Length: 196
Ligand code: NI
Image (cartoon, protein in one colour):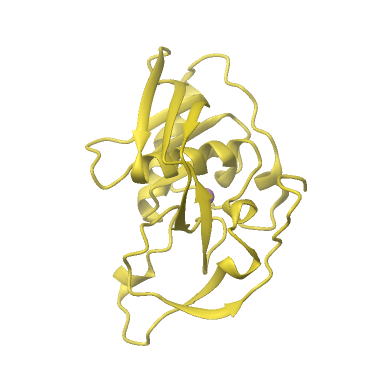
């Protein structure tokens, strides 16, 4: 296994549409293993393949409640219900967090590493992670869903912060000790959505 290099904004691969995976191959399994290792190393809740330089339609998610990571091949949102505002960050947009609109519940269809299609209903952090990672595979970033232009914050840390407080991964739940400055910052926010 290996820790992969993270692709960061404004890397154009983050704006590309990932390609559907035809079948589970040994190479795909290796990519998934490395993605899981990279996600854990970065203390993220999820990771999409384009964030590590691959345009295959694959993402992994591991919330604190999970015993093992969820592998999503060719995932699709089948149904989304409700609306809520949540704070999130992204491993590809380090140093920032933002307030975004997300669904309350989602229903997702995906293929697992066993090659079988599965469906799941999710809410709370898992629903947020599913929307965030599936967006990545469609070239969409959370900054496209900001509630408004003032909703992106630069994170500053206390001097005494230890490593634990550096957690700034995809979708961390905002319970770290980071302070958010009120200064708003323009980082490629665009009202037009997912265009490069
Ligand atoms: Ni992300």
